[in-house]
Amino acid sequence: MADIIQLLPDHVANQIAAGEVVQRPSSVVKELIENAIDAEASIIKLIVKDAGKTLVQVIDDGKGMSVTDARLSFERHATSKIRTADDLFQLQTKGFRGEALASIAAIAHVELKTKQLQDEVGTSIVIEGSNITSQDVVVTPKGTSISVKNLFFNIPARRNFLKSNAVELRHIIDEFHRVALAHPNISFLFYNNGSEIFNLPVSNYRQRIVNIFGGKTNEKLVPVSEDTEVLKIAGFVGKPEFAKKTRGEQYFFVNDRFIKSAYLNHAIGSAFDGLLKNGLHPSYFLYLTVNTQSIDINIHPTKTEIKFDDEHTMYALLRSAVKHSLGQFNIAPVLDFERDPNLDTPYSYNQKEINIPPAIEVDRTFNPFIEDYKSGKQITAFKKQTINNWDSLYVGLESKGTKTEQDFSEVHFESNNNSESLFDDNKLDTVQTTYQLHNKYIVSTIKSGMMIMDQHRAHQRILYEDFLENLTVKGASSQQLLFPLLLHFSKQEIEIIKQLKEDLEHTGFIFSNVTNETIEITGVPISIPESEVSIILEQLISDVENEVPDSNFSVTDLLAKSLAKSLAIKNGQPLKKSEQEHLVNSLFACKEPNVSPTNRTTFVTMSVDELDKKFI
Ligand code: ADP
Ligand code: MG
Image (cartoon, rainbow, N blue to C red; front, side, top):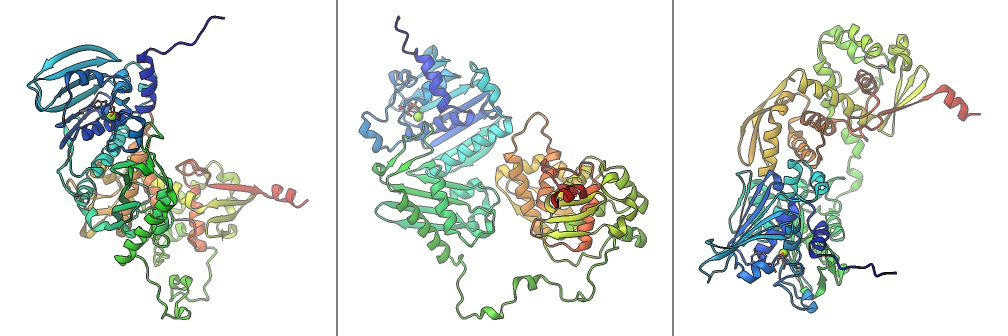
């Protein structure tokens, strides 16, 4: 049989390589900025249009390229950075594989302009899908400008795979943060669709972090510093009280290169042991310097993972350095041996209300709706409750404050498909009893047997529908704050808030002033305690950032979901009988009581028949 193996033509090989190196516009941003850094630029300008889908341009004032180098730079495996395999273990540069420009030129329209300091004129090259279409002599400043247009123009499948501009821009900003944080000695400018997003002057690490994440960041940072023979650590961790629900601001740099490491992340986590509430993540900006011989960067094409010779030592050193800093700055709790633990009030007692007469247990016939109707007042019966988020349970109630007894019974017949079969309506007030299981599930008797409801999900559903109604149909009432609330955010977080401002105002927020870094709030929705506002907005921003918008993406919907998620009573929260009943009733007044806003089951039922079978 004839030989069938052939060498692939270069442009095909380049396209294959591009699949690994260039996943999205942000990969182009990363590669071009890294090249500019390797060229020893002192000012780097990044210009993107349509989140990089139309244009990514990087202009640097670095050393530029000669005519021959300019041409060669687009060849695969063409690099000025290493010569022998040994050099792989002495790397001082970001790049070394010599495949970025070749890969990018295989899948986009690329224009290069470059000039070295000593030359009078520079070189311009246009290359499209690996074909050089023109090469000219040009007048251009010292340094290099590379424009990458119409990314994936020749691979429609990849182009279609790109996410919305908001998501792609988010990736670019992430990539930009990573390089900018690693190189405070370089000035960076970043424009998107003509507007300036970042203008970062030369500074030190701390100022760079603050310039990127906003003025308020400064007071959150605890310095970390350690110098051993194998590892030097510099940088900062965020104070525990500023820990976030999302893993946003977590950065490791090894020899000025951003890397991902779940293992080292764990080291930081364990240094924070006991200092963070469950589900919160510390922020950190840690700059590690190690001997180049002790790491291998060449294990992944995007070079964000590296292999350490001695990972265990890294882990131990990092953990102890962070622990030490937290201790030194009085952040870790101090053990107090003098104190007699017997004198401490048990936790559960702290929460108890003192002036509730112990004799009154629960009024089983109490129904908040009916009470409301008869007295004509807002429900205040349980407002004394001190548990967090408590007021929020009444969100549904307060906005429906005009409901009559008539409405109440209608609710059970009309808006709930299951209600007719589920509850024995005549006996509802007297017979329906609830029981809270493990502070998590509400068990309730229904006509056919019993129902078990997840309190957190159910409440999310109730709040979600309520917010949605406020957002789309009527404005919610808001509660004026005595003193305006000034909150600090980073620039891009402010951008997100600006986008959501109008919708937020429908929920009851009143913004008096929005600047580049701060927002001033003079009114909040009645359902939101003032102390929770910043955490709720933070959650909302991270939800918006993480949402991958599809065709039916709706900001209003996301906002309602996010607020409902933040405000819903949590699992683990004890509820009084009347509160449990109220929750059950409100859930079944919802349009879609069966699932939470994120499509999770809110309750399950078990009929007496099913139970009978279990006892056979
Ligand atoms: P690598 O960075 O791995 O060497 P690239 O494909 O990114 O590979 O770049 C190829 C070569 O082109 C580099 O080694 C460098 O010599 C040259 N080059 C690329 N970008 C620039 C730039 N902005 N300034 C000067 N030289 C550059
Ligand atoms: Mg490179």
